[in-house]
Length: 423
Ligand code: GDP
Ligand code: IMO
Ligand code: MG
Image 1 (cartoon, rainbow, N blue to C red):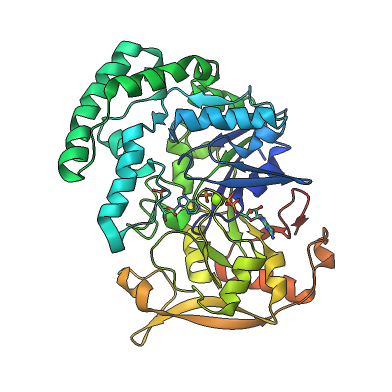
Image 2: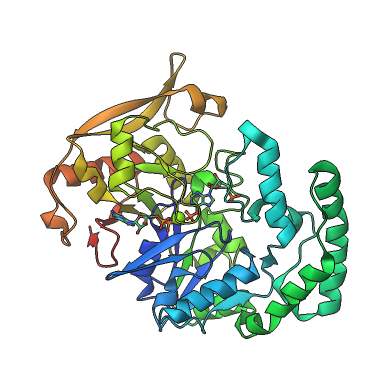
């Protein structure tokens, strides 16, 4: 696997952490390219469970260099806490590299994220309240503060003063909040500089050189395709580009170096936060998915919404990412059901949709057109060879391949690192 993108093909939490960790054994670099600590990636090694929000999942292997690319937004306090957490649990994060150009999540970003959600009321997005949206807003407004600014106190303070003047007006006059103190923020953030300094690098150069040297590089997406700022269910999305294109701009490499684009998709679907979700279930089938699949947020602990697999959405994801393979996770969770349903189209006002409708309104009131497939009703979590999978499970996977045109190359049958079947 020379240069491979691993990304979420649905609404996040597909199991990207597990999949990245599975591949990372053979990777020289694992690079996060977007998002921040809104991500929660779970890696399970034996009895140990790690929830990573910023540090790439490759950190678990001493042979692998984890890299946080320029497209990410970094909350430095959170980053240092995660480094400490890993160290205390016997994982060495000293190889971690962070882009000098990555933007910082500032305290006013977290504050604005929270108060804007409150302000939106019923229209809220259901963000993780980590300051992601406001940090990317400042980046694009060219008012952001970057990692490299931590090492130039004068520039840091100047940029902070400009940003804070506007933010404090917003906080006090629009949102009825107390203003924030620039000196306090500067003291806190400049205080992080010395601990972060050894990790800072020109990561675009690092990644490009690794690829030129024939090393294997894994790009680890956060969130998922349908949460993409351009290609997702806007405005119920995150503020970055989890799709394959984001891996290029978010790290500073060109499209020609990418060999493989692996879409990670659950065998069903989950979503946290608000926004349309045509196959969402509100019955005991959905409850079973949540309980058996342990569908509670890694970051916020929120109960995830669950529903049947949606092949209209997955085919869309295959297209916008040019997927070369699918990694289907949590197939074991479907062992609970006698009969499985898969959406192959949507129906609304007498019209049938096999592509995502151009008017998003349709996504809210459409009815999924389901096909039914027999379940297997047997424990598959110990299976490691494709030939040992029940015929019904193989038929389910073939159905996905037929409707997306993308080969299912791996299947995950449990949270642990070794619970993978190569197809
Ligand atoms: P990510 O954000 O895409 O990395 O996914 P999360 O870690 O937020 O959520 C996926 C959850 O499912 C985690 O608790 C994983 O440990 C778990 N998981 C991953 N793959 C499997 C699988 O094949 N079967 C089961 N039962 N759990 C899995
Ligand atoms: P991983 O990487 C699932 C959702 C939030 C909300 C929307 C915007 O673990 O798959 P944000 O805080 O990003 O502004 O919130 O996006 N969201 C996620 N949902 N998995 C994630 O990350 C998510 N990161 C953000 O719930 O609906
Ligand atoms: Mg997650």
